[in-house]
Length: 89
Image (cartoon, rainbow, N blue to C red; front, top):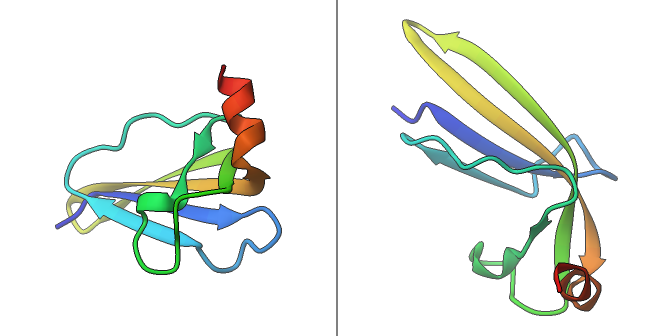
């Protein structure tokens, strides 16, 4: 059973996740202001001129039976990857 979930939502449309990932290992921390490159997300996403910038992070922890589950919800805004790359230096 996957105990760790990462869901990515647009700040403009919070009712449906852009992409979701599940794992039996914890995800590394992601903070406001960081960039996500959707190029490796699979069908419907391509590397290139658009990235997502994290605008908010929400943690949800709950029990699924006897198993604790951690869900991270990221709220992102689309940005030009050139602007992100310049900011990263």
